[in-house]
Image 1 (tube, rainbow, N blue to C red):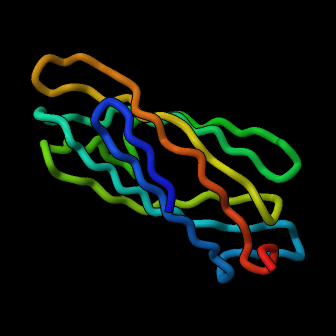
Image 2: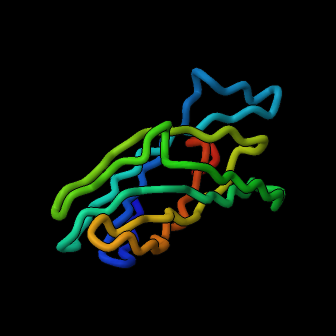
Image 3: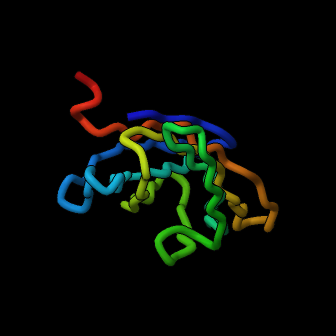
Length: 128
């Protein structure tokens, strides 16, 4: 697991290879990731948008940007956390992702970016 704290928000990521949804012979590798977002601020925040940078082992870059995460724009109260699971397909056995969340302070409507730490996705047999 990797974690990063920025603007009073801790973002932690765990990754999982999904062999049942992958087809290595066709260069299709599926990964899942679990994100935990903890709010250590004295105010509630709302996650408005996400912006991902996704690299595969060839150095190819994809960018994904959009509203919220997994179809919602969660509000995270002080001291609380929000967890979700999503996935990413790769054309190679290894890759990495990182990015930002656009958050809003519920008290004053000020927006700020929170860093999503860089995390690697690697099929288990490549680690041997």
